[in-house]
Length: 188
Image: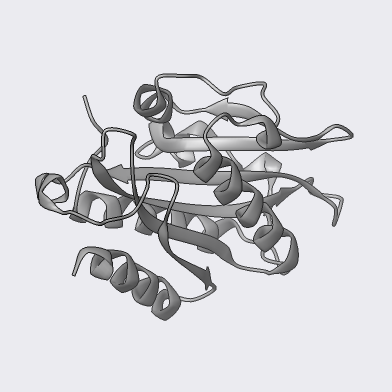
């Protein structure tokens, strides 16, 4: 079973935006206490939770759809040790973004596996903090991957490690709509 495609992906990111919009603090972070499975039920299989520690940022939870997509569970692994270079660099860039800005960090791009099967990916993430602290305690990331059939027909003369990507900082519905438009236009 593959991750959902097309408009379902936009709906999933809208659900994540709505969650953030309800539970965000004044600093744009979400309290760890507000991250509950029942509040993320429709997107939970696509959620990745990362915790900060003295050793670095570590995957604390990797949703079942993400595990299925990569055929590996990264739970417990440091982000900097992620075996897929594009994923590792994306997470590190998003963590930097989430540490320095007050909204949702959104990253989207198109890349291919070694067999040159192209796909689109989009991640939206927010920084987490304990209720009584301003210090970042972790990150919550929604991961979606689009295996739409038309992607099989695309040819880009790029090696697999090359990425066509966009980044956005989302603090309003208008920002969200612009990011979704950028995601949709990747294959245009």
